[in-house]
Length: 430
Image 1 (cartoon, one colour):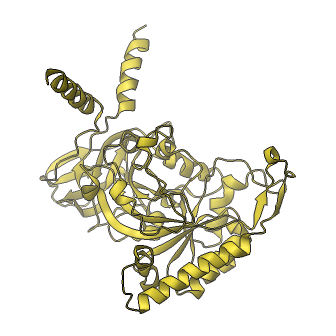
Image 2 (cartoon, rainbow, N blue to C red; image 1 turned 120 degrees about the vertical axis):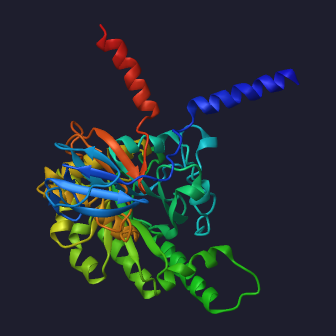
Image 3 (tube, rainbow, N blue to C red; image 1 turned 180 degrees about the vertical axis):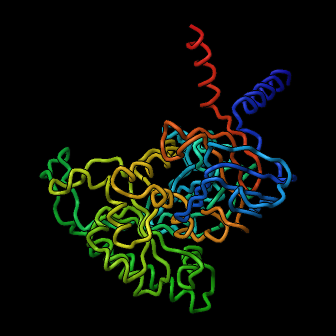
């Protein structure tokens, strides 16, 4: 018994040593931020701004020269910049901690058609990977499952919570579908010819998806003798309560996916990936399809692609009038904290800096359906924002001094910052 007690004490100490920072308490005092350059998130900049928020909501956003009483705690942010919290869509943050440790990996369930699998209930609010997002201003994310044909249901969370219930911002917002490829690459290790060749099973895979959708529709119209969890989970797609997020990159795949979804009465469709979306912009606009673009820091997929296509893809779509956000699926989970720098890279491709900012703020909030509360600094919206020493899209100057989620002041300490202080103290002292 004594040994058991000692083990329990050690486990508790270990948990405390490695646990996430304690979530912030509810805002009780009004806060005023004065003098910062405010990047509203909708393309507007206020050079010498005044922001006030109370009870988690923005109550004033305007020019600091206005004669209005300042409330509560006043933060002098002259020379600094204030931004809405950045949003990372379609990520597995909180679902997997260490890829090589199976017990910490809950991003992929067994099965092909499993829309009833809910990512939210597996979300680990105390993830160290999640915690590492905040010092770069990434404060919200859509947590999405992976694997199979229909992976499951996503939810949107904020990154300062005790548990998944506290973290939830929008529950079960959408279903995630991995669209099959019309071409497949030869597996040289299996003796197959290198290069791409038609996928002989493509039509069968489409028929399988079509049949599942039709069965889901029939299930919703009839009084089934017993509940089918998979078909029941699909019903929000046909009422417009949920969105269908389709992972597709090829021109043909995207056209087939959108056409099949619309023909089956699915009202809201978003493309994730969209490598060749610049080729079908008229089709996407005609069907009101938004695109969460894939990893921008990458090499071209095909020999005849422009060498810089992945880098300039967001600008091509923005210029064509498509609603675009950055998803960066090819980046490892921990690299999601670099989301603002991926957005900053698009400025080098010709995007205006405030439009680049929209790729990870207002555009993404619209795509995810949370724009009534998040994505911009506007009166009445959530006070989810941060103050940076400089340009938040530049890794050299994005140094946060304050961050808030729903008005709650966050700790910006993480395992990474602790290690940085430890070793900088060692080497700077030499």
